[in-house]
Image 1 (cartoon, rainbow, N blue to C red):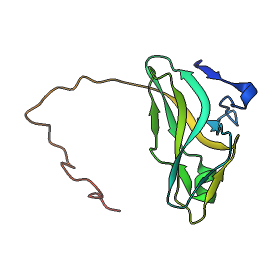
Image 2: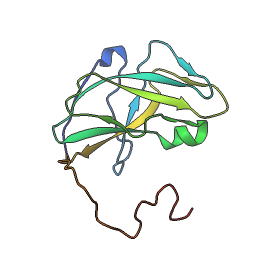
Image 3: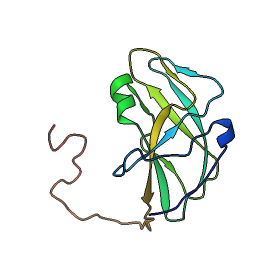
Length: 146
């Protein structure tokens, strides 16, 4: 099990991420708000979590939607998955977008997203005159069917 240091202010209501089941891949993160934030239908908002991470080098945190929030309310994470790099020390904030038909209000302590700790592989990008041929070639955007 990997260890990740988390700075948070518990006495002000920030909640440390938590895996809700033993087999969960994602740990839930919660809103850290002084007052509720209403996201109008079709709009987005950046939501504070009050969390700051020291992610080990060679890893990232991916911020992903919570499936229940998306299915029940049409609320999801705008830049899915969001990436938190190992050298970032600022607050984790989540960009939520309301794709539902009704306004959605986020309250302090609401579970708003989940985070995954994932290994990162960096590549060396080399200029090339030609690329190898494949069966698919340049076909994309549905070229293999629906």
